[in-house]
Length: 114
Image (cartoon, rainbow, N blue to C red; front, side, top):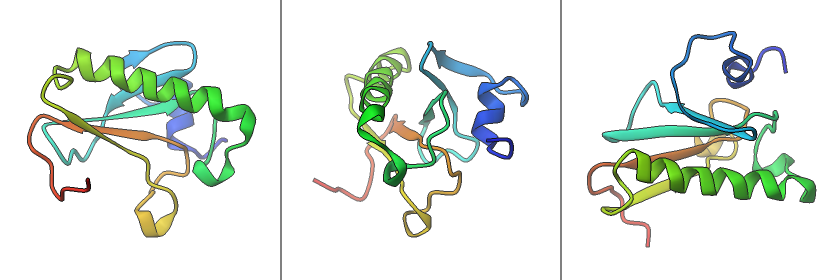
């Protein structure tokens, strides 16, 4: 997608320091962090969001979660705990129409969800 900011990051068209990258995903720090550690993990393939996923995308989503696990270890929040969040749609505050996982940690997070 030409106008997708995350696709432009993946294509190298926008200067972004990647903190993790492999063949399937890329990760970088959120520009408006909500916690001391706040990274975004995105698929390199454009997927607008959870509602647009097909069965064929299950491997990409699983890969995103495993990359989040590796990144949490790399960023030093694995032992203390971290939160993974996927927002879907406007009411959930998804502001970029490209699937992404927020990795948040580095302090106790509120509200407690479970």
